[in-house]
Length: 484
Ligand code: GDP
Image 1 (tube, helix red, strand yellow):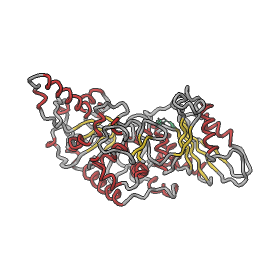
Image 2: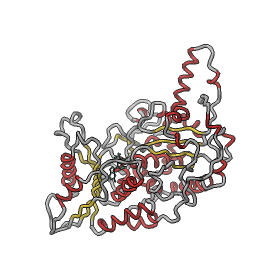
Image 3: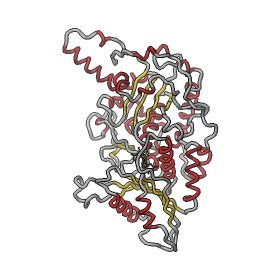
C-alpha cells in the first residue's frame, strides 16, 4: 500500500468544469474516407479481437468523454467517492518534444488506456490542435481548456506533488526515516486518497518514475481515476514485458511487429487541413511516378556529421542498396523522390545529382518544406511536419535517419520497412573508417523505445517477465529496445 500525504490545494478549486475551450469535433474526416485510395495495399487489417476492443473503447469514450453528461460531474479532485462519473477513468496525455516523439508517446498512452479501461484525453495546446481528426465517433478527445491545473502539468510543483515517482520516492524516504526512529511520523500512516496522479515517463524520468513499469505497482494505479501522463517515447515494448498486461496484449496483437502500424493508423488521421496539404503535394508531384521514394534526413549533431558527409552517406546508401541508380538505364521505372529535412541542402544535393536527366525512367526530386529550425511550439510548423511525415509514409521505399522518431512514425504509419542510415561513433567502431554510415533495413515496422528502465533489458537481472524473443536492442540505438 502506498502511503503518503498530499496536502492538496486542489480541493479548493471548483469541482465542476464546463467545456469552454473545447472545439466541436469536425463533422467529416476526409483523410479517413480517402486514404485507402492513396495507400492502396497498406490500410492495416485489424485482428478481430483488437477491433472489438476498439469498438468497446469507442463506446466507453462516448459514455465518459467530455461531451457526455457524466463528464461534467466527474471530479478529478476530490476523493474517489466524489466521482459522479461512476466507473469512468481517464488518462490525459501531455505531449513532450517534437511531433514524432509526441505521436509515439500518444500512441503508447492510448494502448495503456485500452489495457486499463480508461478514456484517453489529450492536452493539445494550440500547436497541435489542428493536426488530427477526432478519432472517436460522436465525442472529443480534447481536454477541456479550463481543466483544473492544466497550466501546471509541466511544472515542477505539479510533478513534486502528484507524480507517482515522487510519491514512491517519498514513501521510501518515510519508510527509512521511520525505521531509524522509534516513533513513526503521523503522516506515514495517513491513507493516500487523491483522485489524480501524474505518470512521468519523459526521457528525463527518474528511477522512481520507471517503477511504473513494475507489475506490482499497476494494481494501485488502477484505482486512481485520473492519470496525467507525460511521455515523449514509444513505451509499448515495456508494456509487453509486464505480466500484468501480457496475456491481453498477446490476444490483441498476434503479430507484434505491426503494433504501431495498427494503432497509429487507427488513432491518427490527418485533419482536413492537413489532408489538403498532403494530397495537393502528392497529386502534383508524387502521384504519377511508378515508384515513390522517401528520404528523411535528420541531423542531430551538425559538427560531428556535417552536411557534405551526410549527403555522401545518404547517396551511398541509396546507391549501394539500389534504391537510386548509379547510372541511367533505359528500362528504369519512373521515380519521384521526396526529400524531408529541416534544411534544403539535401534536397538540392539530390536534385543536382538526379534531376534533369532524360532517357530512361525519369527521376523527379521534391521537397514539401524546409523549416530550417525546429519550432515545435508553432502550429503551422507542426502542420508541415505532419504533412512531411505522412507524405513519407506514402512512399514505396523509405530511407530514414537513425534515432529519429520522425522517421519511425513515417515508416510505421506507412507500413514501409525502412532503410535506416546511422552514423556510428568512430570511437566505438574502429573497423568503420571515419563516420562511415551504416545503412541497414529495419527488422520490422516497430519504433524503438529510446529510454527503457534498466530492468527491461532481457540480458539484465531484474526483468520480471523476461523479454528474450519479445524485445531486442534497436538497430539504430543500441541502448533502446523494440518489439520483434
Ligand atoms: P526527432 O527529433 O527526429 O526524433 O523527431 P521529432 O519529430 O520528435 O522532432 C523533430 C522536429 O523537428 C519535428 O517534429 C519537426 O518539427 C522538425 N523537423 C525535423 N525534421 C523535419 C522534416 O524533415 N520536415 C519537417 N517539416 N520538419 C522537420
